[in-house]
Image (tube, rainbow over all chains, first blue to last red; front, side, top):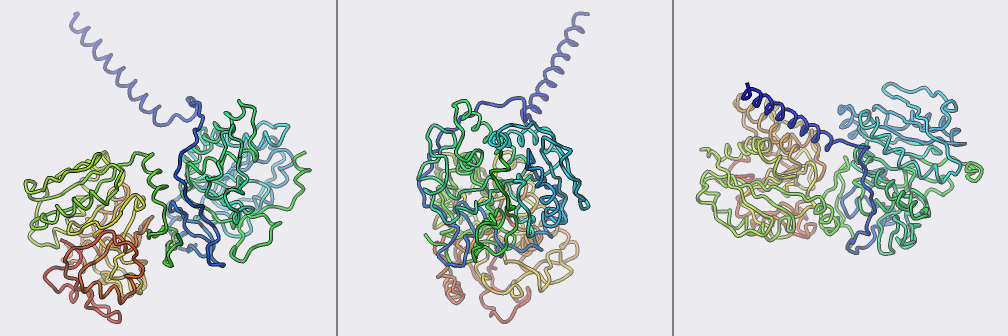
Length: 330
Length: 304
């Protein structure tokens, strides 16, 4: 009968309509890869304010709180036992990304061994080793609750290209699998070793680390990208700290947004035939000005062993391995 | 522009908010770009309704200016709520609640009410909740620097003294009991808050603990404040507000604060109590008195 048919058709329309709506809502809330808007950042008009200084007036103290109320983590500012006690029952998994491409595969063993000794002891960890040569990655015994995944990536001829691709690779990797596997993610350079405990005091929504070469410098001296044409451009009046590209991290969703933003900016520069002066570190620094980190790690967490250790940095936790950079990059 | 010589970070890396530790322009920019709405809950039950006018007028001048604010006024007399002219982006929601015979119950039932409303409507309407006493007024800026997942405020009467002297509930039969060697700070129940989910968790836990105590015929020495302190000991706040955010102006308290050296540290008096009888200040530092001795005086310290 026509009325029955009409009712049936109406019911079917309603069902289709509501399932389409439900699908749209689902897609809107988590669609990491397929829709990526073209992003060209406009210079933010931030009010001028004095640069925060890591070394306080008192000669022995380090700044412990940024002007936007992010803690600056250094030895003595936190109770490691208390933090372990707080984080242990939360059953979190901490991810780590490292890129071991070309000759950099030789650093993996020492990196992993030192991480097993010092990084997030007692917590679940998942290492992601991105490499062009999976066979070159050594087997390192891992502690309980700690995993390792080797992810093959394309090799590039120029080390700059490799470096610039990291942001894209990390964001893609998060979208594809890391968002399901880890709660927090740290993106570290591989040519470094852990020398002292690195624990849950470093966990936060978006975490940056102060570059060891510039923590006494004024913002005008920071090696920001200074060409206006670049998306990584930073004016003389801008800047808080110069952050190192070797260490950043945070909640996995925040790291996704951060790396995606940097990647978009890198693409925009590429379209204009520009490469920023310190590659992705320049873009990282640009982004950290407008998206301030919720936690800042002191240079204890990103040290350069060639530098003499100043008295106010009490415990070097993560630092460079002595190496011949020019040979490595050839 | 130097930082004050006060602790600015807890051992679990939560900032302690003092004047001089933050740049408000940076923080305003951050929160404005996220278009946050802040809910302010206040209970004006029985004669406490008379405090509303001053409370709301001063909040209009000093509280979260430039951001969206919802005042949630819980009262047993909705018709007597003063109609205050509010700035743009700010609105008042009047919510009827039950009155209780005992002021202690009125105070403790706030936990239940906030938890229910958090679940039923606050989560849809605001990003952050700030829960305060009504017999107070704002005297200086209280803004987005306080916002965090979970924040507590240092009680000025117990700042800079040893934890063994905090008026925690010590009776092991109570859900709020804290052992002698435990404790970080003594927080006031007159000013706490956080994200809606975290405030929901806190108020629900406190309400359940209060009900369990009631079933065992126990009442914690400082009522909802005792339970709040127990909760924040085991669920550390992500920000702690300095005593700038909870000041006492009664003469006796000023004397007491001076004795503690507090007036030299508190550079901005932001949120102050109106006349309250502060019986706690009659205890010396050397003698930690139990709850039953403390509760003298017709108008107790911590609440309506």
